[in-house]
Image 1 (tube, helix red, strand yellow):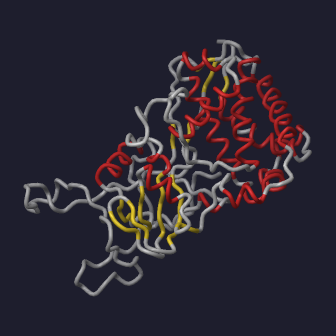
Image 2: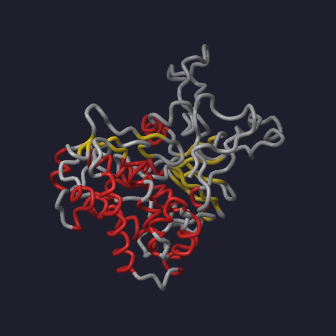
Image 3: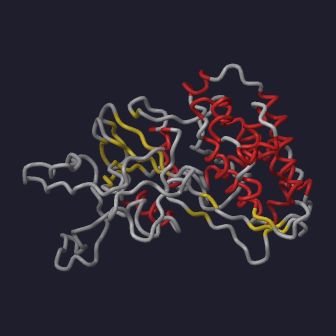
Length: 381
């Protein structure tokens, strides 16, 4: 999945690399080019070429101290602009922006995204399953589950286990390795390849498209998503020595809980797009019919109204939940869980003293999809 979108010359965010996923339509965003601003109310409607003037909800509004003289009735600055998930710096720290949106602007129109933005867990979770939000696909949702009826789960388990151990042994004797480049990048692709009979020697020219498409149909584009999810999962586990000790020989159930917790805290897809086919009441107002809506998966997963201590990675939390995948059967979802399980087992079996390199801390990056881009480890401890 490329981190570099197509952008018209002169458009976009200076200094930012905005990710634009391809493939699976549920991760595809509209153009990142800023929309032509709408005319203020009472001036004859929106400017030509811009979006319809958004009436319900609140429109890009946070306090702007630079607006001298624009003082409201309570002494606050009247002219305000809500932060955007695409603002400069959002790739490094989206959580501050998400917090402001959740607390002050649960419904706002973002001209960079050309979409209404929902950031609270209750609204995002509802939009992912509400029939009034259309034009999206999430692996594991009911329509997806009905499309996969001839998948041998035990065969997937076998090829996932074998692929994970092959990859782990290849890096076990190195003094240092990058788990993203040498493991996470290849496990989802290698598993898909092995499942459809592509030999290991052909993995380097593999086929993200051919192997994945043969296995998962419309979910084929999920290979890149699973790479990022796995990188975040391993980064979360290895960052805490207590988690390493707890998960080294953990039963499948605990590994599964840790995987779900990683998807909640650090989802690989930060923003999903839907379109309304009717007016929908949400926190902060009403989303108009026929509107594009950006669902902030990353913000919803850290909503303190839903999760206690939402910024903490805690596989044992008693309020679990994730929004990346639906709850039904799908090969992409099944493989993601198996890859997390066998990644830990293979890595800790081949490298019992595996740890992060001295001074290294995983740092996530990305706007639309997000994960650590490197995970430097010492295989021998």
